[in-house]
Image (cartoon, rainbow, N blue to C red):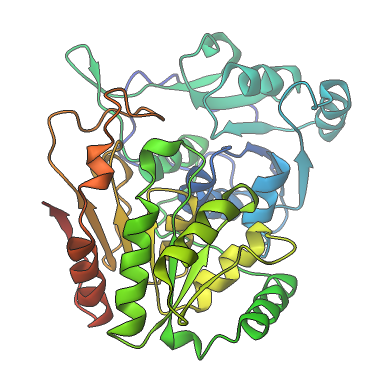
Length: 374
């Protein structure tokens, strides 16, 4: 269990024969920071847990909110939590990592900082993608495929799985997976009771936010019009999800909708990630921007309509047939900017309420999800 073998000069496409079976592997995994990426990494985490086996140890290294996303799953024997500078205390974390005497560290992150943390841990094997000035810290390097001089990245699900395969994991289906805890479900029960919501099968969740930036936001007046139509015309109750920093836009949607069947989480005292997971898990379906809760819906097998503007739906393919992705075909798309560089935001504002309503109704009728370009 001392040597993984070779360096990889191409993107892996096939699993590598496991090298360490029968040993008691001590495995550390640096988990991504973006919530959507965390969920897209779950097939790789599942594969790595199987690789470590019942006799092995798998330690997660992650931010505190990432641990909330993964709560309810038992992939890790323990988690080491750290905060971004200046709040994180590297000396304490380094001491903990070194004491573990890890055999292998797998970096599902791409940053220099986490590469350095893995190198300083003393792990015998360090597996990750090259780049960001950290290649020399890795004992096994994977490279993003290129077409001529342009990088051709795989969807994150596949990129993460390739890291698992480079470690020695067997093939794993690319199915996203999450769970809720008893505390998550109790919080959702309390919210349901406080808001007076009907049976979950009659509740549609709208998610308007996203940490990426304002360019991903669908206008509040569009969300309000969609919510009013689903409530008044179709008899559904509509629940507007929000995080702590999104209460204002959620309240704005409620005010503009002016409909007794439209509700919001904004009035709740606390808005933990586990609550968002639980309400999406039990709802009829989800309409969302391209943000973290999108992946909650997929992981819990809910029908999902996802609205794309500055980002590209093809780059986050997820092999899920109950999702409809909606995007326009403007010359400026995708720009990948947090704020519209042209200051018009047409890629989101011109996604019409009619278009989103039709897609929502299609999924409510249990038609298969499709990718649609208007």
